[in-house]
Amino acid sequence: MTEPPPPPSPRRTSSGFGRVLVVVYGVFAVSATARATVQILRDFDEAPLAYALSAFAAVVYVVATVALARGTPRAHRVATAAVLIELIGVLVVGALSLVDPALFPRDTVWSGFGRGYGFVPLVLPLVGLWWLWRTRPTR
Amino acid sequence: MVPALSLTLQVTCLVAAVVLGVEGVRGKAPLWWHLGVVAVVEVLLLVQLAVAIVLLTRGGEIVGSTGTFLAYLIGTLLALPLTLLWGLGEPSRWTLVALAVCCLVIAVLVVRLDQIWTTG
Image 1 (cartoon, rainbow over the protein chains, first blue to last red):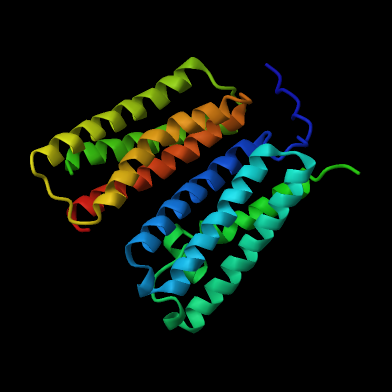
Image 2: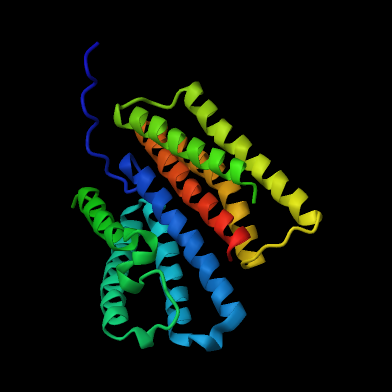
């Protein structure tokens, strides 16, 4: 038995390793959306900023998931924008939540750089950007 | 909920994740027995659903949020079928890796389910 040759680098974000990435983004899209919905419906007044941020993060994850799954050149740009916003979000919110915990009295997915989720929210956008670079449309 | 069932599910999910993950990393394409591994996890999740329904109808109390509990219960059930559907759109080693990741997520959700039931 000889090893099969490595497949050529896939062009679409939804292909190959992208299948796995979309699943991970999908998990975050679904859980962030569910969490934000519960928080906002039940007690928005308790922590408006934290809960609004939860909703914003949910939208970012949903957009990233759909764009990565579509994989067209236009979707590639949308996914890049969403993943960049995600990276900035987790860095800014992560830093702010450590410097001034009173700002976010309720945890969000990005608090403490995603500590509550095994720091996956911090690693995910880096993996996403790497993958988007690997699958960038040829000009 | 039922500690023995919860533990069985967690161990099964972790074993399934390792088996499918290793097969994927070794470059295998999805085979029928891989789907069998997925089916075993899914059947256990259905048992968990049945147990939850029986306990709730018999007056079992959830310490934590009922909404969150139900969301996790349904989420664990849908995760594998959806991942399978998406993964088989392009059957490859990555289908197996995606299913392995899904099994890990389910293992975490099962732990959380148990926590919500017993401690809130």
